[in-house]
Length: 456
Image (cartoon, rainbow, N blue to C red; front, side, top):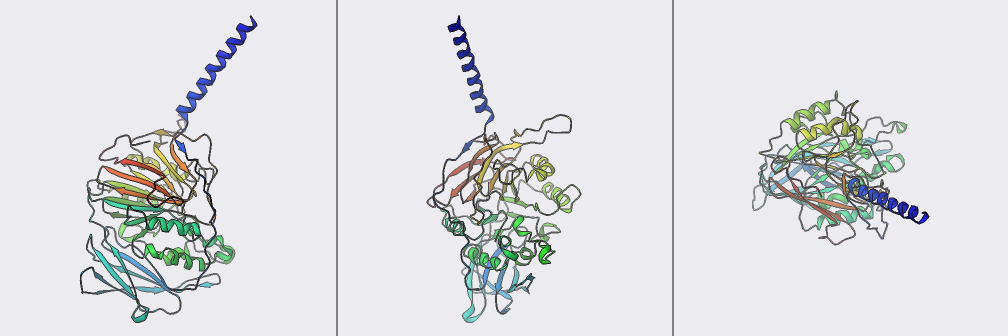
């Protein structure tokens, strides 16, 4: 009798264990990488002697203008940009504006911004800053005109900072064999506010670090929490002061009232940049603008609809967990309604990719508050792993949630290679690997033109 009872207990235990294991298969998410970094270089690079440095971004809504910005430390110098087309001897001049700003005990160099406009699509241009022995020459290429089948390749970097790891990220990005043509930057630039008195010299050293890329291709800026720089204890009461003075955006061309939220077209993509550290609720200017903006996107012209923000809406790391929840509640239903293809974020110092997921069914009585798979929803990608001095976000929630397809705490960059109006290829590259190695990759199908199940 005792033997029979023991056998029944063992059998019952086996059934319970089987149910638990099956439940874990059904309820848990994708893959958590077991890769571990072997070195730690998240120490800021030393301050070097000041010199002037350059960056560019898109200067209009469609890609036929660039904003050229540069800083001269000791004297204003010439206020213009000399530019010309490849294989042309005709040179033109775009005159800019010069300004300075102060922040606590720091006074900036002379900050120049010039809008080089009326450019031709799909054309390489050269440009010169300074004259005589001080002249410096650079180049950039304009995108193809907005159109459904024009291939285009974007890079993705967030939370870069200026450590030795940051330097490695830029090196890997520049040597990526997929040859990205423009970079979508996901917020948190210099990390100057991590220094005593928000040391603005670190804005200068950051500018010099990234010049080797951003002087030759546009970086599309998203603001993060490290750009706020609000420090009433230093009598600095104007938020975003260093960023606003140094980094301009084409917000007016997009009908926006703020440089922190705006949109651009670039080849086959319509890109909407959101500002999580400005008012974004239902009565805010940003919400009003966003609703009008996303409603007018013509998917026959720009089939790929992409949103950039800083804090992720879906995040299974313990770092910054649920910080994007209020923005998700306000905007996620619009993402699903208008079939946004991809949402890129930073903030969490790691990488994560979701399946197509939404959590929009909840009302105050139905209790439906669990994210579910939704083929009309975006894929959410966190690429906040540029290399800054705060280090990696290594602590993850367990078990891995069902919406999370892949996650890894390493530094790196992303590449979005849009092939045509139906297909794109995304790859994430960690810094520790060779330039061509992809640590994670996925084929993506467009939500408007080919809304098949691409979740894996």
